[in-house]
Length: 155
Image (cartoon, one colour):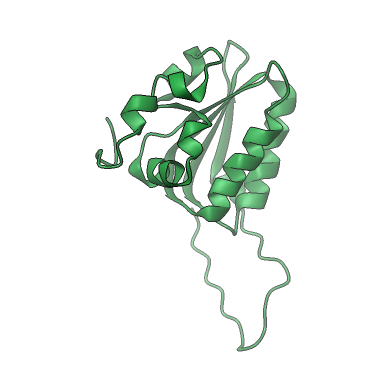
């Protein structure tokens, strides 16, 4: 992710802080028709709106979206809102959203907020691509993601 220094005079505030989120997001289409959106770096309030727009746009071209958060190093409350928004956009019948949540930086906020119980979580992209619609309670990664004391990277 590019480093941006922002120096502002005291009392001033930028109208819009628009960081380039394309450096955080890559999109690939699998032979099965699934679209994999891989995020990397920090997912925070400076880039969530753009990430949400770019990610939900991918739902128009697929019925199976895999959101790979393996490269995410920081996920704040705005990032959790981003996940809820994308999940809501993927609700039409026949649309699957599989989230790859492998690291502690992603798993812990999902567990604390209870989102791990309502999202279809997986440990790797291959598992997410192979998934059929499952309930979060029967998600194959559910038991493995349920323990916050697990190491930061399950590999």
